Amino acid sequence: GVSTASGVSARPTVVGAGASASQAAVRTALAPPDPSDLILPVDTGDGLIVLDNFGGRSVSLGACSHRGIDVFPTTAAQRTLLACVDGTLRSQRIFAGAQGNAWILEDDQGICYRYHHIDEFLDGLEVGARVERGQPIATMGSSGNAGSPHLHFEVRFDGPSGTAVDPFPLLTLPTAGVEIRRPPDAVECSLDVADDEDPADDEDPAVDGDSA
Image (tube, rainbow, N blue to C red; front, top):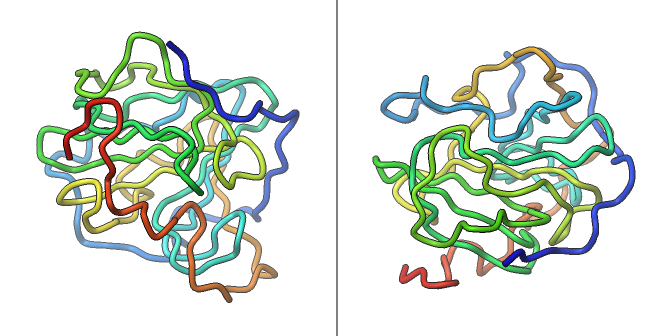
């Protein structure tokens, strides 16, 4: 069946100012064994805005320990979320606190890719399913603490609760139809708890057959 969050709002409010790909808040030397295999986790559609905000300000709360990046649509049209690599759907979370509905995708090297704020999970997919790079897995939404539809996307080494690394340099950006931005300097880094994160988020609870 299909699990849904609260409905998708009309045209989303997009924040951020234009920035080049060299201005990311945090960089890391870690990378998947074959980073060329990683694709953008959202169908570009009519256009996307990628906030280069790993380790910096989050969209909702302004925290400075943001463990992923945020991807917004430029129109109100529904967007499809794609498997960024070949892998296995390790965990599914439904109305899981700040992250809302979420998939955790694991590749063959044990690197995990987290998709938060999902609206609907695609029918026919369940925990343990094998997916191919570019395969639709869900639709973008605003479940959890998202103020408007967007994808909070994380890359974690050593399992779903492992070290979070910056997804931005692992993606082929800039690319056609995608604008890169950073959160505005006016948003202060002042909170201790990062957007999209609850204390239980790293515990990887078992959902729908996940034994982790």
